[in-house]
Image (cartoon, rainbow, N blue to C red; front, side):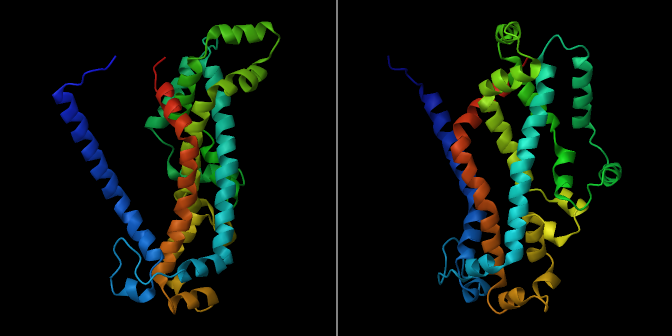
Length: 293
């Protein structure tokens, strides 16, 4: 049976689609410009001839980036933080969200209130720094993982998903002699793949783009994540013109801007490639996790 759509509805859908397409194009234009510059020659970039297509196409910018061991080291640090951090985030968030989703837990409303309090009033910078320092996490990659092990927003999303799991299923598992941990890892989490995929994307993007925490807690240049490395290349001109660095001396003789753009592309593309594989779970998990208890 065909569903008739009114003219007003058609006009609304067309207008909505047009506006969304325009907004998407506007948001993509800066990325396309950076992409074009990363494949353009130094003369074309310096003369301002690059817009949205490469001019005097060259791979020299990427060749220089791939030769820099420090960038690959920062890349490895970022991958470690993203993978290990996301796993810890999901385990910690699920471990707290599951008991808070069970009605038999006494005091769960008070705990939820305390979690909500942290969303409204975030911890001040200096006390947070002192806590990280007292735990001996300064200048370690763990300083970028443990302080952000649980996001309050993501906790509420996962809890909302767990609440929708039938209580009868949980009770049947208990009757079969399963403990709460077995129920969580063998029953609840396998049913929660959409929620895990959704929050996994949130956590992974957060860790991949980590900047402020690394700026505050990391001094060892060998532990710099990729975003701090980009900051050095783009903001710190003394770093780019460091005469002790043969690599960046070579850059100054070629295309500093092109090298920067190539590094930005390399830092951005990997996290963008993850989304298409998780898109189906992401949409489903976000919608289900948004339902009220």
